[in-house]
Image (cartoon, rainbow, N blue to C red):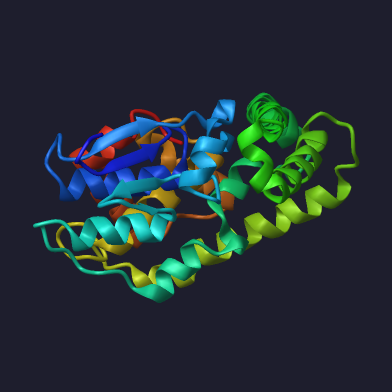
Length: 271
């Protein structure tokens, strides 16, 4: 077994990206091992992985005989164990970024009208369908018995979401929820977020700090959710999606991140 920390990641995961940004910023190449857990195929629901992380989420870090099972704990471990010293997290901002009301995962899969539903149909049906098949397969594995309530809850919740994408249930209430979620994101984007951002550079100063790993990943996912395909069309995607000009602080912040070798490494494409 490797004595190096092992970071479990997936290329399309918003919060895996936050941990990967931290790893790239804080550790030389080769000091951390990376293992891919394919979320599209529901590999995170295998009993062997649920044993590592009862929430079956990414990122997950195995280090020093322990498992760190949240984005906050993983990035905190990297900050505390790196020889590169950076500004520690502001708990208030971290709590906001990980709150359900502006959740970036939800942003990617919600749809506000039939046109957006159609545009996201292939992604939603493929991802949610893969999860459902994996949940049903792993839930009957002999090692899954002790996690029965976990599988039952996930099968029900994911199945309800999948039915929306498959057109098997009414979308009207979901349209309302989607509008509310995007309203929350827009409100944070054009208001409270600005109070945390400097006029240039990062929250952490000249180099990214702990807050920046989380915010950089969150902002990139929101850009992708609004249709951006690469870093150069993100600002126009924000403008089109939110219906107004992007504040100069966010333009500057986006440019600062997307020029970093760490960001370029983690985001060969936006997700």
